[in-house]
Length: 286
Ligand SMILES: C[S@@+](CC[C@H](N)C(=O)[O-])C[C@H]1O[C@@H](n2cnc3c(N)ncnc32)[C@H](O)[C@@H]1O
Image (cartoon, helix red, strand yellow):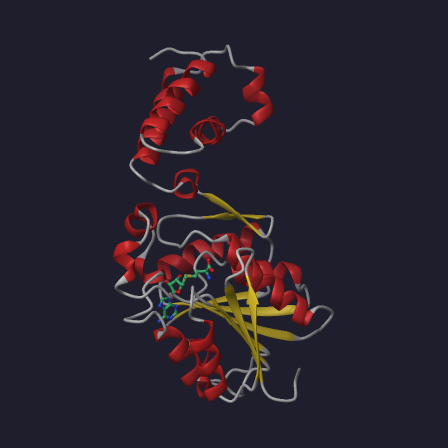
């Protein structure tokens, strides 16, 4: 295999187009940049150069995997979230842009406060817990996940962003690893896809992302039921609950928070205008 960078890009772009990718040239370019480990500027300046055969093989192997539906973030092993770069592997959910609202809301609620203890349930890559720790430097974050493999990735991300001294990772089921501990807030982006909707998800999500991170039970609300009903496992009711919710779930989750003793409840919309965050405080703490 011998071709210039320009030729390789043209060929990859054509293959991606045939496979139905809308932004085929953008994808081809982004994959080549990541595969060669170069910048966009370098790529444009060296269009007539011929990469090594092994480099081209590596690139076209990625293009083939992308065509088969593998998410870009798993191929390159990175995903940007809150302007921070997170390691992602197929054991963790790829952090989504809409989840940034969860972090932004926590940071807005607690800006300037000291001695904060925040619990992130279902931490995955650690994107939420670590971003909060970075943006609230006076906070201590405890991050729980049922999967030790997931926590291995999250721990590497904490080291990457220099917050290992303020983010503690614990393996276990929801509040079990933090029983009788006190927190100012519980934040969570739990699995919230209904079991029946899993089948209807886009192929790259359904086939490649971990179902442990997606499946929220028959109506998608199983985790919110438990996150609100089991709060008495903690030492005291946290002053703030902050949950990301799926499409059409905000009212049901607000009702669950209300039943758990939280009377001051707001819903925040994402950029598409969909209620995406439920924020709950006990009465009188507005
Ligand atoms: C939707 S993902 C969220 C990941 C990450 N917080 C984010 O927003 O990108 C949900 C996470 O919950 C974890 N999880 C599933 N069941 C759990 C349980 N019973 N207790 C704790 N974590 C659980 C999954 O392993 C997964 O990492």
